[in-house]
Amino acid sequence: MLEQLMGLIQDQSQDAIVKNPAIPNEHNTDAMQAILSAVTGGLQNQAQSGNISGLMGLLSGNSGTGNNLMNNPIVSGIAQNAIGSLMEKFGLSNSAAANIIAQVLPGVLTSMISKTSNPNDNSMDFGGIMGSLLGGQQAQQAQQQGGFDFNQIGYALSDGKLDMNDVMRIGSSFLGGGGNNNSGGGLGGLLGGLFGK
Image 1 (cartoon, helix red, strand yellow):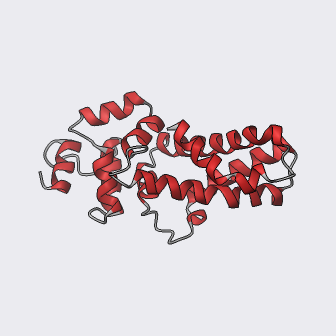
Image 2 (cartoon, rainbow, N blue to C red; image 1 turned 120 degrees about the vertical axis):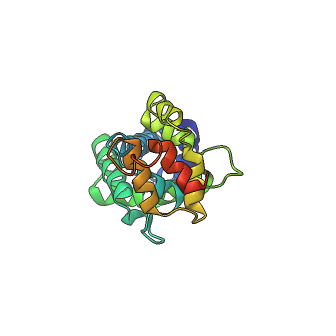
């Protein structure tokens, strides 16, 4: 996931970073790395704190923020971390750092969402991203508890077959929060009900 994400950041950074005199050319890669760290750190924090529904909503393009990704609380947290990192590492003003992030982050996340929610594009998918964010072992445990498949859920969200209430129930079951665990086999039973199996 990191290589693909860095590629997206490089694609979106030509004007904001590479052609920006405020960031010397020898620090272009460091600036992109700071953005990469903010994105991955922000997504990991959400995954590890149990906000599976928020992440799945964001990655499927169903985050409920309309066309403005920057209104999403996950994205706004990532943006704040990235701005702080650029200010600290490169001595930029808040407005200069915020301008860079406003130019780079929406394009990066839009491309990531587009790739992730497209079942015909295997460069990034829900399973790979969630596996990276949760740590392979936790994601593997989820799959073993009745065939939990982030891709199946993500693609269903993308094309409107599931709504966020379904994902919240899945997330609470996955994290042991009660949900509808008592109806026929925990997570497997819940997913079976959602997908008609």
